[in-house]
Length: 350
Image (cartoon, rainbow, N blue to C red):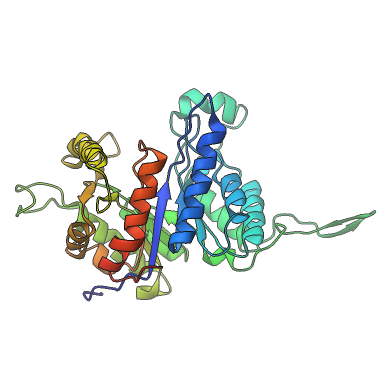
């Protein structure tokens, strides 16, 4: 396995796209403006999160369709679409359509599992089939097959004046190689590798495996987030046909303050401090462990990332923008990421 740090090859960012329920257009427009700015600053990729029945992007494929017409170069991704809310056949059609419109720039990230608060939404989402729905890996397997051109129907040909295809149309040949799995467990990492997907690892992992023996960052018996994340990356690549060349993108919350005002710095530090308790012990029945947010100058952030064993084994990142900040904060953060942090991590400014 690799022990030599990989140079940063692709710099990306992730946004949740929050909006005011009384004025949703402005929030969506802000997201599109941020993606446009990302392209102007030289980012390689822009990713959007997915939220249902909340005040965040509920239809990332539609948002990225709009973004595809306002950009020309930047890759556009979803991190991630929870497939429990989706029909894989219909989603495959939407993804292929947007990929065609974007000129082959779409990077769809997905995850599996039952929809959040399923017992409260099942009547609206699956009124007749809730107990029969497969929310496991079989659902993503269906999507993979359909995107990659497997048959969706046992009929193809002409019927009267209508011409039918037996597979999803439009078909975008390269899209099947740009599907990502967002995973937090060893089983997910292995499954994604075995099925030839790319792997998204974020600021959330499952606390599994042995606890640490202690050290400068924690007492004996504490959980080592970076160590767990590293184990996911290595398990994924060990299972993937491409081995060490298999694509992995790391997503952490990093907030550079190089050009921030004193008021912005204070807000960023308060945000990170408020979220710090969840990084110390696993959270909830799923035992989720969160990475600490990193706030500081680009030089300080780069120093911490270069010491992160998981970061040392990836060459793509999608840094998550904090979801409660204002548009002008995102402009400052993205500008510092592109012009200060990227170069400090070894990627020349775009």
